[in-house]
Length: 128
Ligand code: NI
Image (cartoon, rainbow, N blue to C red; front, side, top):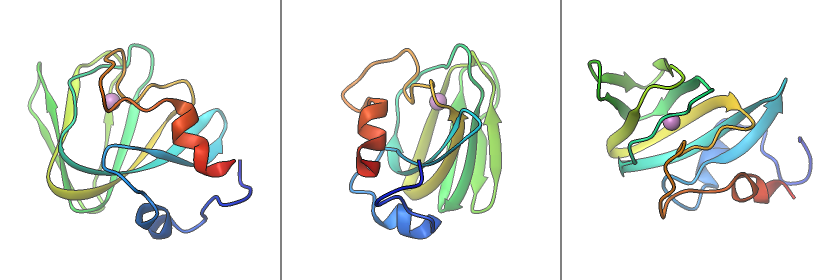
């Protein structure tokens, strides 16, 4: 995976992101992808039936809304794991930089397909 234009500096990877809610894969290890995403506003309600999802906030603040439990507010340096099968919606009032770790097969919008859904090919296009 580490070839060509792939970044080895996290903040450079964030600065290279062109759009909100459009994650990029920056590393792969043991069947897991490490992704960076720049987010602002509301994402979509979704769940990942078979995958836990790790969130780490690098800059800004991110709220993870849940339907069946209290929301979680993550600030710079905070991390959180969304359990598999649990419906959630990330929200950021202002621009937020998020690191995600999840199995390579995970769809970032889960079983919800919307205009902001990015395929894994789109998330890794910058590496080719
Ligand atoms: Ni998710």
